[in-house]
Length: 179
Image 1 (cartoon, rainbow, N blue to C red):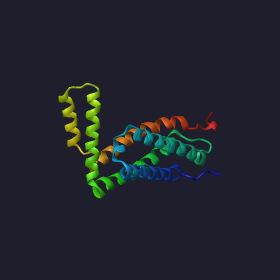
Image 2: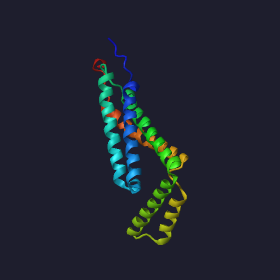
Image 3: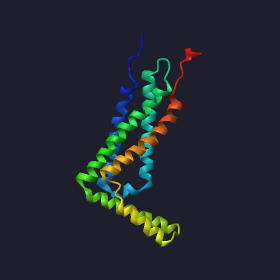
Image 4: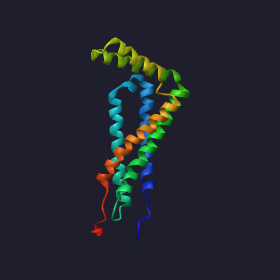
């Protein structure tokens, strides 16, 4: 009997779950401490969460679909669909928070980012002119505008597509009858 379960139908719920988790992290960081948006460890934490979700999606999709093979294409789709859906949900939540609910929070995060950059550059001993230029660039570009968040989403998709390709190489399963 042929397996009629599609890769997309198995992988899509993981994207929704990932989006909920990433959105929850965003909302909690917003509610408790805006400085978390400038911390490196929040980015690392999000990276680890996304990787875990993608690996789980690969494993579950491979179990549900591989009969007997799990092609590179299917393995890539099993990684890409969850990240595309999850990041889209998270991006929409960020757009809502920083553009409609509390636009002042976006400005606060920009100012915190500028201050952190200034301190880091001073720690590296860079000239004041370079520091002032970098801080001015940060202050003049709001990463939380709708357009900038959508651009970030596209760049994240490109990055995670590469990760998805690597995961697809790991999780693909060749048809044993093809030999």
